[in-house]
Image 1: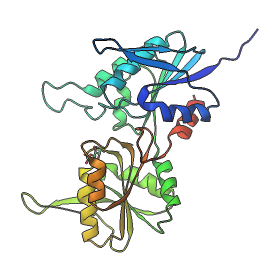
Image 2 (image 1 turned 45 degrees about the vertical axis):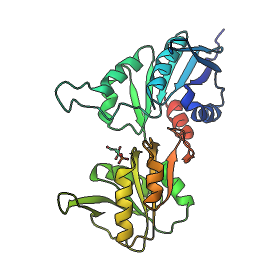
Image 3 (image 1 turned 90 degrees about the vertical axis):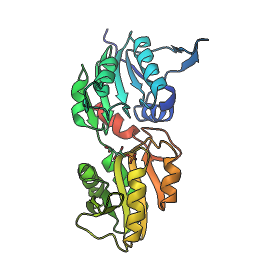
Length: 288
Ligand code: R5P
């Protein structure tokens, strides 16, 4: 007799909240996993009972998370695995910039492809990285989710700014949620030490501005831009991103630069994760 295939979600330690929201969106459950370490520091894990299909959710936020993903993929080898990488660390080293360097994105992609049938990434740094996986890989964008959240702030007619030209398409997609103006910040070098950042075409004076980017890492770019936008008369400056890496005290730097609030998703689980990627990932999984 035909039996409908059953599916469960399982996750690494640093993606528990997103995985739980995703399971809820898919009307299924999260498999319990016990994580521990051997006396020499090596990681160990043991999963609860699996079903026919397993959705593994794990952001590569650090090396431990990467190892947990590798171990989880192996532990779930009795089922068909779809791997969700909400944030893929190492993706920014997507080329050999200098002789002797690894293409880290490729190395990680190869390792994570083994044993899985499909991979879904979220706002991956460069789409070309998808080609490094050895199995079909798709990327989804949360730009519209970011835009929908900005709508709830009732900022009137905010100016959505990309920190550079490369992020302009992302800014455009965010802005489309509210039909807002968008532009990118142009950098002009004034001297050996002085740089000016200002919107390429529009004027920030008297406006609420939201600087949007895929990643906020050190927050350096946005902090500098924020200070300059206030000098140009901006009313309020907000920062929004998908992946809040927030390394080296970035959040504090952003606040010190006058950022009103940092808006981010739960691809990396943070106190400021006000947007969940769960519904968009669930929709992508249902489209398979
Ligand atoms: C760069 O290519 C990314 O899209 C971000 O613009 C970058 O990671 C932001 O870096 P930071 O927060 O350190 O200025």
